[in-house]
Structures are given as structure tokens and as C-alpha cells.
Image (cartoon, rainbow, N blue to C red; front, side, top):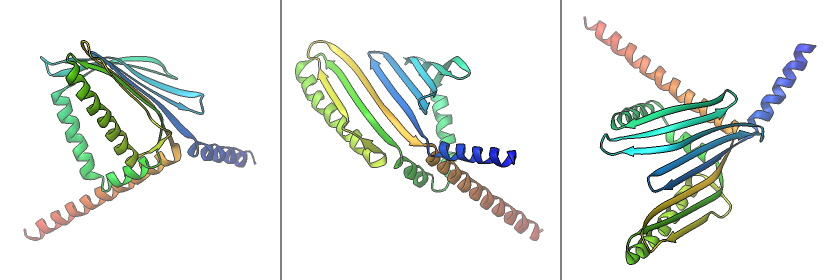
Length: 225
């Protein structure tokens, strides 16, 4: 009897979990040579996990990006230094290419998931100056158009909720670049689970197909011996 009660409770908790919504608070700021990135993941407004990249430096001479990352969760605060070089980017690109080659229908699966993702509270403020009033005025119009195009493209992949707040402030005296982008990304855990299961299914199908081809090739080779 106790076993069935526990089973029912676990089942109810699982149902509640798959219908629960995960909220990801995104914040990115750029000011001169300083960049700041923060991601805060929360569930039921109780469980939360945040990742902060408070310092990003670009080393042009050594062709690398140095970043300090701080994560804050149930396990406590963790700090980590990361170096991104041309070699690491190439290696990541190769791994990503191999993933796309193995997972059939990756884009289709991802696009179906993105359609279930909601982005709200979008705020994108920029202040910049090019040192010349005429050039700054022209660039200001281009930045407005660029932001509109980016949000327009984004709306084709995800569901944009509410009217995005966009601001471009030209600074006609001096050289300046400042940007602040923030938004809230939301999706249901059930949709994420479905995507992972679909990717796993495709991965197994590809692996099984490769295994069959390999056995066929070996059998064909031995038959000619």
C-alpha cells in the first residue's frame, strides 16, 4: 500500500515537473573594452542557478579571449577562468560539425523546440559616438535598422511576447560604445525533455545504421578473400 502511495506521489511530481516553466534571465552589457554577461536560471521562483562572466578581455596580440566565470547554485559559489583561443574555436567548430553530421534532422528538432520558447521583457539600449557628428548620425540610423532586423529574424524562430524596448542614443562629441541587452527566456521542462529524447533517438538510429554498414563492409571484404 505504501509503495503505491509513494508511486502516485512521484508520478504527480513528475507531471508537475514536465509542465513547469523554466525562466532564464539574460543580461549582457558592453562598455568600452569591458563586457559583462549574466544568466540566471530559476524554477518555481525558488530553485535558482546563476552564471556570471564579470570580466571579458580580448588579447589581440596573443589572439585569445580571457573570461572569468562565477557560478552560484546549491553547491555554493564556484569561480573559473576560461581562455578562448583560435585553436579552441576551431576544435569546437569541428565537434559541432561532427554533431550535426551524426544527428539527422538536428535543425528540424531545434526549430520545433524554439517555437515553444518565449522571450519577453526585451530591452536593448545603446549609446555610441564615432567622434564625428555626421558619421554618428548615419551610423545611428544603421543601428536602428540592425536592431529591428535582428528582432525580426528572432521572431521567426521563437515567440516574442510584448513589445521590445529599443533605444539608440547617439553621442556627437567623443568616441563611445555602450550596450545593454536584457530579456527573459521561458520554456517548459517537458518540451526540453522531448527534444533530448528526439535527439537521442536520431543518434541511436545513425549509430545503428553505421554499425550495419560497417558489418556489411567487413562481410563483403571477407567474402572476396
